Image 1 (cartoon, rainbow, N blue to C red):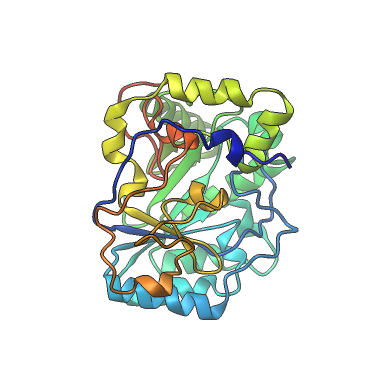
Image 2: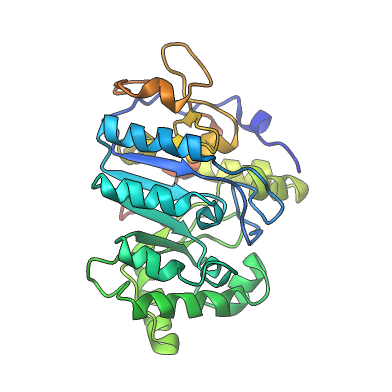
Length: 324
């Protein structure tokens, strides 16, 4: 796989600093039952990195000590970590809101037959990746049969009360098929909602539109096709300074499977750790009583992906303007 960090290093992205910490995003491992072309984690079935019970204990201790309102659990397929359910249960026991970044097909994996019911029982918000509402496009990006399995999983979640504008929240995630900016979020959500309801009886709460990041598997593919520099130039040309106010790294802290911390998940994948008091490679256990407010955020050229056009974050577009 082609490395991309050196192509992003010489950046003129503006300096930004942290605000109050609202979300702890925890990557519990890179193992996944899929190998998606747009994956910025380079996750897949052969990855072996998994968060241990000991690190889960540290995560839970941090949630309690820092009084974090939300934990965003991601991967890989986070549910494949053997300690995933314990993390969910303990976080919910603290009154923390739990989000699960779910690829949907994991609900049909052996040993996960009761996963949907587990998520519903613990009032876990499901943020489900569905990069298009058309079968051909999804299977091209994620593998044959993924769309049908995803629809079955969505229907199952709906049957449990997810996505029906109640307490069980179900949000979908869209990624473009290639090196282009995503379309405007609101009209695309309308298209998703109409198509999925009419064809499959599927309902959901919101659609999150995300920009593909030029890192890991997607970035390597761009390098192979000679499209990397053009794509980064596209992101830079669409830069909107007003999006700086809402980028997720201002209020989110990313934790890797070993417990080390980063300003965001993308920096984690580029091995760009959070810098705290001049120290790099800071472990979550060192931040139990720390106040990260005003700490400078590590930025490189990939950060233009979060500020291009309508903006992009783990919660979708940052603004109503823009689009492709």
